[in-house]
Length: 297
Image (cartoon, rainbow, N blue to C red; front, side, top):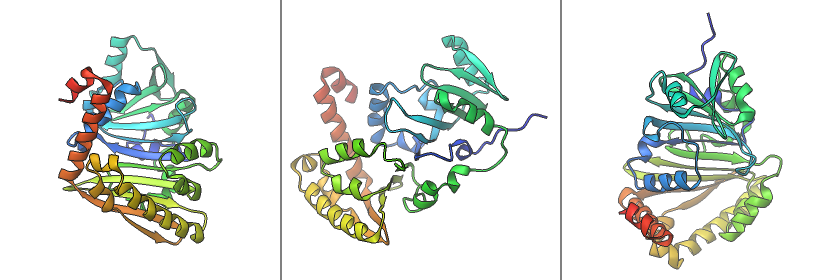
């Protein structure tokens, strides 16, 4: 009898991942964030081979800092036909290849394999043998035993969040890029003092937002707390932030610390959050021209 691949999406993620996250598309579709997500998917030309309306949740992990060097495995949970990928492959003339007990379909930048009618695995080409080996390795979720997950997952409320990302940069390869982007938004202090970062949104009657930073020591955590409070106070009074109606949202964020960890937490009423996101989407549509304005209506 052939070994049975694991059905737990977390079982497939690389234990050496420097970023881990999940997106609950079922919940996201009910919010004003969905049009922005669709816009990002379109502009980034994401390889969404399976129709997104069939996908309920995406769980992912991997390494890399840019589009050019990213390496990942993603688990797509949803409601699929047993021949979902096979049918798409025939339709698109997509080549298939066998590795171990799994059949993979090779797309331009990724390989896809279907476990059952509820789980599809996607990976970058360099991860295909890792996925094939994992299919026969038995139960277990090694990524949850790694320091990144064990340190940040509970602190950032990842298990209950609908959108979440935790990340680290152990080799410092992405530090220069991270610092450069952070400086543009006045967040240089935050990235300079953090060695691991996490962010999550839990969508209930309100939006519960959590961000956490792990610093090397308590002194730098105290420095980061002060800098973060000052930055939030400054941002809440920013003219552009107020134009978007985000001033009240930012002012609801509360900064706290625990040893060498710094937290930013806040609860935003759904009506305020949706109004701000809708306004942002419309502003972006106006900036991109009439075709985008029509789509936003």
